[in-house]
Image (spheres, rainbow, N blue to C red):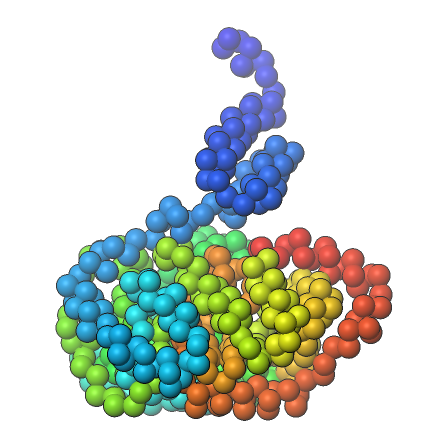
Length: 485
């Protein structure tokens, strides 16, 4: 037996090991009882493509949400978090008032996320929609400079260019004055020099990269990344949205016009942002720490704006953001206005959009005419014909690149956050959105949407259907990579 093994070629040995691992992977796949089409696809890839199939399955076929790779129990079990969530529980009377005043029959949205412990509905809030990075970053810097207790940031992209240094300088100044400063940044998305890291260390800024990897430039799309953009100041002020911290997102420092949306929140919803930050911090630090009550200060806001913070990713039990968007579209009666830089929807979202449009709902989607990724642009275009035929209206943003991730429904519900309308946001990356149940905020979102429509051209279905065969082939080929983009 040993002699036979020695006589085999290296390639034969590799194949034997490969198919031994394939059998284990195939058994694991079958026991998951996942979608039959998805399961069959991975089984074929595993069997037909030696080594490559295993790599593809390892990178994309595993369900980390179910494996609980990203722990959160330590944070959710802390008494401070439990007490905070208890304080936010609304009685039936107040929930009825919110339904009557704001939701017009769409209370299912609240109930959907209220079933999740880490997405409580908050009622005492104010929210401000901020247009573009050049308006967002200075506001964050201003609030950081006034911090008296702590500053917590979690960002996908942080670079030490002019825009990033605006933030870093403010963080260092506050840390040097004894303020608690914690920073989590995605290792792949961000780029910080050793000099900048040394300076933050010397200033007292605590920082941790999220999931460091080797050769990050070559693996930016192959990993579970922290795509969130969160800033929390003193537990009173919170920011989230599409604006990252680099010159790319700041018009005047970027040669290409960049259209984005961010929100500034004051009130109870900031505590939800704080809770999700701590879950990430717990993961990146790999050491237990105690959350203090001052991280969740008493809310001083009297304004009634109902907000839920929905987070999703491998650290959540359910695809919360996708489920909320899906439910909102299904409940729509008049209109659904969506802005997204990447339109690569899964089957559930496609069905929801098509059914809404065919039911007479005015469904409009703004996407960039020219994407920052050719592959993503062709993949997105491959979905247009089907939704256009169902009655969905597609508008191409021509002024520059639209990076906002927003949706507004029937003048009562809106969502602003980090989640794109694509596979990665719904199933892979760490994302976070604000779900807002407020007519005034919805009116603001509609106003911004209509303003953006002035910089768009609408796709004509007949013309699009008759586009060239080469274009269609490119789109179909790139669509194969949709789950990876």
